[in-house]
Length: 366
Image 1: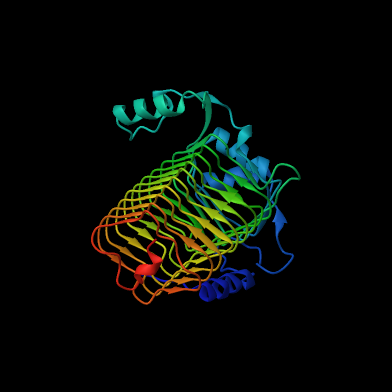
Image 2: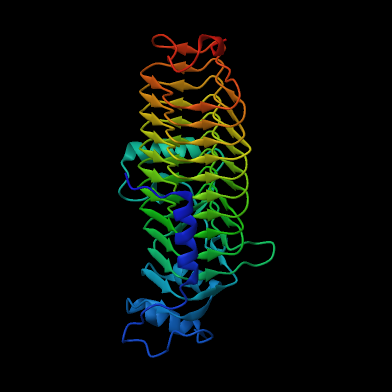
């Protein structure tokens, strides 16, 4: 398994933040030195994108990118630039949510099911047919608007952000990502809102830092998702569904985090994760292999009524606060080998496939 410790994450993030230059293709004449970024007009932007060239070291108006998306389906590649005014996808035209407005690659059954499920509360959507890649750039916010506004926006092609700083909130509630999504080494300084979003392909939030409250409540991840991230404020995943492997290995939750009611249909990895004040896993269904090995719970953790259907590991986990497992059901092999409890855990009403793990004295199973 590819692992990133919290210390490594911070070091990597600091390293990326320190990088101020990138190599410039010979096709571009400007030098990449501090203060050299020059504004680019809408016409120049369109011309470069039509030629398939990346836009490097420029100051770009967010509205110009939105106009480009509105009028074309060209791939957009931006590097080492500043995007002023944020990206407000709400300015794109709306279309009615119908089966014909969904991506061509979907089956008729999937289209019908999606419209049936989402139609009652999503009447109209905005559609983006451009692949968007943004590297080593900053997306500035507008006061009261945020850095990205993409509520009820459907992205039909890949979205790749790498070493990007968002100084305001990024809102993707009820968005649809039909292709791969990469938020690599992205600073969500204003937090991220992905409530109700649908991720159809593999999704990565590797080495991402969420600087404000962030929510993925009710989101669906159809394939593998990787969160090697830091959440500095509250985070919420309540009601989300993970269909493939969900990797939260080495993730740091510095404040409260809620996974209440989440369904993990595949493997769930929280090894070496660090949990802050409160961690809520009440009512979660872990349907695949589950691993909390070497996790650290610095505050209170709730596994009330949680179901662990396959092999589960809490080996070497550290429970520094109160830990509650009342009514939890462990339906396969379970290991608390070398786990450390600073306070007596509560297992009242818990169900084990065999005897309670021998590492737990009988007095703790009450």
